[in-house]
Amino acid sequence: MELPARTASDRIRTKSPSVSRPRNILLIVLDQWRGDYLGHLGATWVNTPNIDALARRGVSFARNFCQGAPCGPARTSLQTGKYVMNHRVVHNGVPLDSRHDHLARMLRRAGYDPSLIGYSTTTPDPRYVSRSDFRFSRNGDIADSWRVIAQMDELRDQTDMARNYLAWVSENEPSYSGRGVNELWAQKSGAARPDGSECVIEAALSDTAWLADNALTYLRGVSSQDSWMLHFGLSRPHPPFSAPAPFHRSTVHESLPAVTRAATRMSEAGGHPYLAHLHGSQHLGGYLAGGAGSVASLSAAELDHVRAAYCGLIEEADHHIGRVLDELKSRALVDDTLIILTSDHGEQLGDHSLLGKMGFYDQSYHVPLIIVDPHSSADTTRGRVEHGLSESIDILPTILEWLGMPCPHTVDGKSLLPAVRGEQAGGKEAVHFEFSLRGGFLNPDRRILGLDYRRSELAVLRTQTHKYVHFQGLPALLFDLTEDPHELTDRATDPRCREVMLDMAQRMLNWRMYNAERELVNLNASPAGLVRLT
Image (cartoon, rainbow, N blue to C red):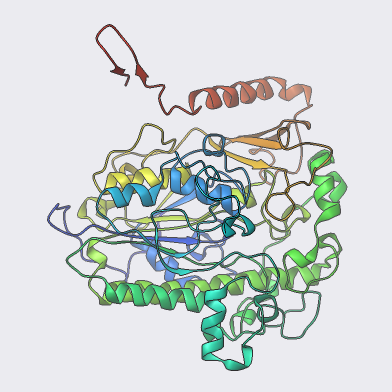
């Protein structure tokens, strides 16, 4: 699939790679943006003109999958280039072992001053800080080696979720002083059910506007002669699902696609016990500020309000991403900047009668990925859409290769630069992602279906044709994606699929054995001394 021809405004001047020129990186990381909600990939119901224009300048990886959910596992895999089974941040609030190298550390050693706007949802290693460290009472902080430009704190006390942002809001509008984000992000109508109302806070004072303003300030301060790296993170379209005006009315309900789900919640994946638990436990308050009632009780009209708000938050994010990209062009930085746009994880958005990110469905793990390489070696692929499978762990090695830096052998991902430059076609044979059923930050002691924290994980092997889901303590699942692309029918116990089931299980075992943690296993003592294996 090729995108429409570039217009004059889309074109960028390109230069051949040269070590004498700066090499800049703009990494745009969104939160909870699922991969099929992009205009240029066919989502006609949502308007993303700035991201569509960006895609015309680079390569879109239409089947890119993150490696974990929620934010903590997903962002840790993105920054370390490792599968969840190796970095072991299996849920929000699980500490990152300090021995795991990550993007900011690698770039700082290379002479960069990696800067961050947004958050990384990282819990520090408790072996090297005090157990009374305030970060252990937060839902993640910033990983070491980042220079923090603007941080969206992730406090979960319902009144002070983002101190820096709230200070800015109060300074610009004193009448909001003392009000928490759940008040500002609630529907202006005051309703506890989705009704299509805009949120209380105006668009000019939204968290998206604040983060984008900080990105503009950063770009206006960088030198055109020095290399820089900016992680530009946005909190949207993460819940609460209420958008500021006028974005709350940008999507016509009739244009929304049909929800993907079985005829009844009981019949989803053959009534799997994990899904039955989710359908009976999801509370609307987790997705709408001040929301009341269960997700299962949402009417079709209310669900459309939720989905329209999600689209509005996307369109607001696209607007501000456009501001940042325009600043990059006006400062003549675009010719020396690798631009990568992605999301940490996806969102169910009513599909399979669920909201949020969890479990094993594609909606939670399929995420956008657009890579724009300014060098002339990538000119032949501009506007291309790659339909091969790729993973978020591929982003780190892509950045390192673009900078001419070696990629550690402990990294599980593979560089996508050859695909961006037309040197290599296709994609991976399979992608892998994982999820833990444990409670995470909000309820770490929670047990689902009687499973303790050592038996609460699932792993997914997804090819172009099949998906295999392995639970530690629950029945496995198998979906035939050719006949059943919406993952509605479990084939794990179908005698006709026995061979496929065995093959997928063996492939997953081979994958885990091949990618097992390998910090020192490439070294071996020998009569000649220490030998490094290749």
